[in-house]
Image 1 (cartoon, rainbow, N blue to C red):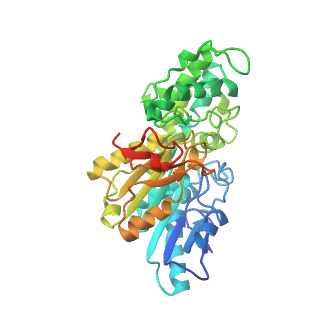
Image 2: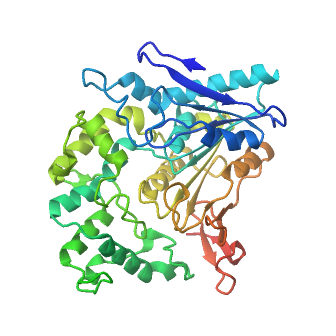
Image 3: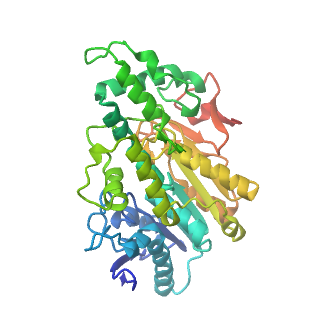
Length: 433
């Protein structure tokens, strides 16, 4: 079906998929990724298979996650605020109302429980629902939430700025050498040798220590390359202070520090900050970068920060929020989610009764990488909402299922028992940080 809004002149597509049999009485809203508000079969087919009535929306902007080219600017080159509002929050709420109404009409009764599941942009959309429409969902799974988009989109571009300004572009071989060295030094901090940094925040490896070391591809590590890596790990800084979070140690340099910038970050700058699709982003220096950050946050935070700490209305309505983030995520720094959890905790006087955060060692963006990622967080949410069983741990595994781990609710951490199989969740217990 299609919806429209007078201020956008849009045509928003909403899809609602319904099991012909075996409906569990549950409704599931599904999220998008990048610049897409949602996807069709990718999110809806598995949901329907598991007995959910499920919905997705294209927000009137299509389903291109990498580029907003077709909708960001109007014919006069101005930001299309109506469609950006759709992308930010409006279309997900509309989809939820329509999805529930269609479900009720089809089955003759309303869904007993409503859930949200999304990662990255989908995680941000879940937080927006909890903050702005606290009665839409009983349980929200907000994986790797892309909150503070006006800031982290610039942080994703920071490695390119550093390499341009320092006139040094280390090769993939050099970057890999720094990652290996950091893992060599910090792998055992969590007590188990698995080539994963269990908590990157505790890793104090200094890239300068690698200067002069031989490289497997020939030559030695240069001081210039070490300085580039130091600045990328440190994160964006300017005259006004810290401008964002850096790449976590152990995270891959490939997406952000490759020959070309991450398309999502590059397109955010060109279409929304510079408002010039032909903008040459390769000329951005440290001073220009800081101006872009201040412009981006100043103009767009009201729509896309999605970081309001006051979740009292969501909590009062009985809502439950489960978030998770990979600790080797190169695209969205896990510190953004950790900081948000801490602000909510301080604003509400505690979170255990309605909001739990789980951190996944070695996991990249939305479950990529060599580490473990949650296996079925929606099932954990159902147990919490419908049976009152708050998740004491969250089952996780590598993509090949050869390693399992029970993730701990932050700030607790998994601790190895020192003698069991390091690939088995049974060899770890949750302990205070």
